[in-house]
View 1 (cartoon, rainbow, N blue to C red):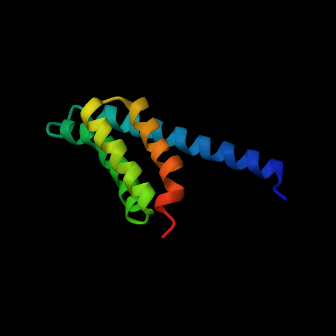
View 2 (cartoon, rainbow, N blue to C red):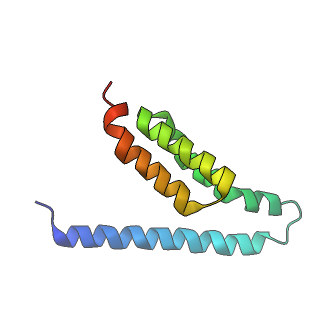
View 3 (cartoon, rainbow, N blue to C red):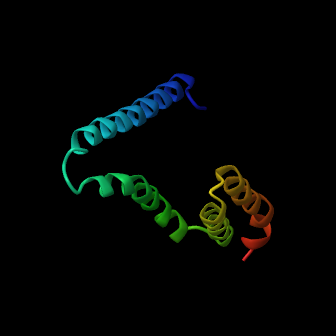
Length: 103
């Protein structure tokens, strides 16, 4: 049985940590913007952080997960439409998962 108080505490702690991480990054970025040569790094950082999370997930993923992520990346690259890319990735997982992951 899951303790409801523990669940609420865990969700609150996660939200607080995410908020503090984002705000700390924002304030550090404001302080570093005036340093010459750091601007390209700050602009590329969100993509790098995303790929640091994404690459291990793809490496350990099943065939349907890899195919769905490939579809999302291609659609985002070609159309720059987040809703279409996310919807397509979810559709590949939901519709193709049971057939692709049987092996």
